[in-house]
Length: 551
Image (tube, rainbow, N blue to C red):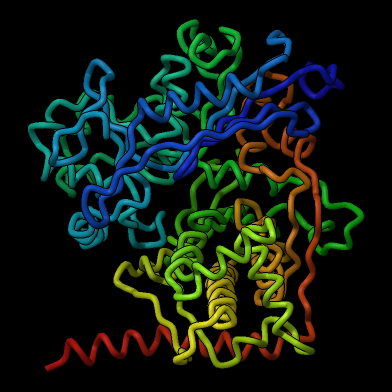
């Protein structure tokens, strides 16, 4: 009964494969999360900038969490299954067995992770071609996309991997294949990470120009020649073998998948905002920017017509919300950077001990410590002479410069807990200034953004949320559901089941506003000044680099 008032006894399972864990949720038709489970997954770093995982390990973790979330449930009430995952590269042979992506020849490690930066030389050569497909990735391809990684495999592991390979999957597509036996790819993965065009398909000339002409063979069978919009029901649903693995009923609908950040966008961007006093209430959904912030951050803006933003990925047609063009900004390290700055500080052991004694997370403790030391002034003013440039892993958007490094100015000899708390605050502010820079680039290209919709792990940190509101001058909406990425995956399963007529209908029915955080406009002048310093930092970094390169 598409679009009707179905019985509330229908459930959907969403599975989210993040960087460090697999999570699953059981969700009802109102978008309420009824059960949750998570399971850590292994990562290997055999050398600097090489990050690997195992598809067998990840699938095993998927099976553990799905069995947990459906315990005690009448399995006949489960109507659909949706997957999202990081955009990591899975390599299998012609019989769908894992192949090694490493010099050690360990075929168990058959995934090059999304954050792997081994293919720097390859991406540089790809960008030198200035091929027309690059205009859809902000003009410059990222080392985190799949073409440079494929080229690296061809040039470095020809015999052990490349020549034996039968299938290269984006991780979300690997999961939907594993569940259904269908090798069809999601439009989301192929358009966002593989240069596929929703209108024109693959561009033979690109693959030939970059030295990957062998992928064109057999109508692109190794990288995908059947491409479906996210939420489309795949094949005959869940296979009996996968059903046994996952503890779910055979034949239930399995949806074409999404990249994890895009699932988060889907889980928040369509929420009904009536009654919250937000400007976007009377505006189209294109006035909303979804920010999915965890290990890294992704900034998802949609438009009715294609908008080309230098240094911002896209426009991608139907890659997140069917019928809309997507632009995707991003920061390569955000949560990972905050951890790096805090854990590397001399006062970190003291922080750990005090947070443990108070049964708090280290970040809850730091936030309360900042409130303690701020005295009468707003907490953000504690960083008046401490400034951070956050690109410790290069800049993804909008500068698209892999060579940029992190910067901190204003350090002192003291290294006590106060110093750690203020450095943490300055780092959080720097990430928010990075978001402001991305928003400005998107708006100058034609986007009009009035509200931020935040989700992911960092969305649970009130300081991170308030700094994004204050520094961008924009209200921040938090989802009522604390796991919007999992909700996005479940929305896919709900659409695939046929219980909703469209992804948009499922979004509107299942996403709800939790809390709205408004900017403190009285602090605007202070943050405008800090933003001027922020922009000077990168300007100076480039000057230093040119001095050192000079004669």
